[in-house]
Length: 209
Ligand code: GAR
Image 1: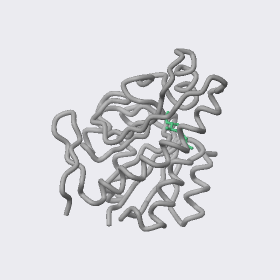
Image 2: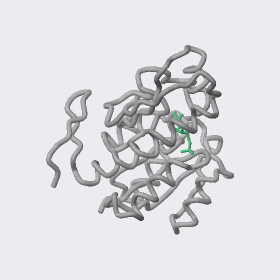
Image 3: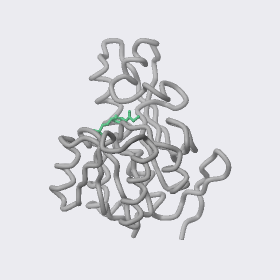
Image 4: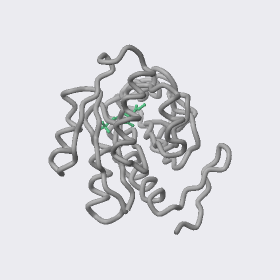
């Protein structure tokens, strides 16, 4: 069983999808800590409901991003996590964080990377940009996190149709329901079973334990 740490900023529907998959026996893991950069994040309430310890660690309590990232490293090391999930986490961390946990941090991004990603592309903005561009297909991506925003080896992707009358909110909901809440738990399950092997920029599905 793997020990999972989560970083959250908002509603926490992706965290909920992971919790549900664990409870249904589809992920051989346990969430040992959920950390939010925002005190009021509903994700922390979701965590508390399932007896998961929540913690608020605010960016503004540290002199810079590096010091903030170091505080997070210390917390996750103390909790002895095997995997860290960026489950709707809206802060870009310093490279010291990814260097401390190579191929052990997963992010869910609400688009098909390399489209609509990088700095400034988060949450609803991603879907606004997709509608503005007029794409007919969008989707979601789960990837390992490296030193750059929305970069790193891709684990799973799933495409979602864009409809003519979509608003950003409607599209966001469809991408969550049809893609994010499926591929994020699936990627975590594959990791927990030892099926993910990183070769250069690619993730290969390996045999497992
Ligand atoms: C999700 O759509 C997630 O993919 C996105 O924010 C939303 C968080 O929702 N993440 C990013 O944009 C990160 N760059 P949630 O809090 O309900 O999981």
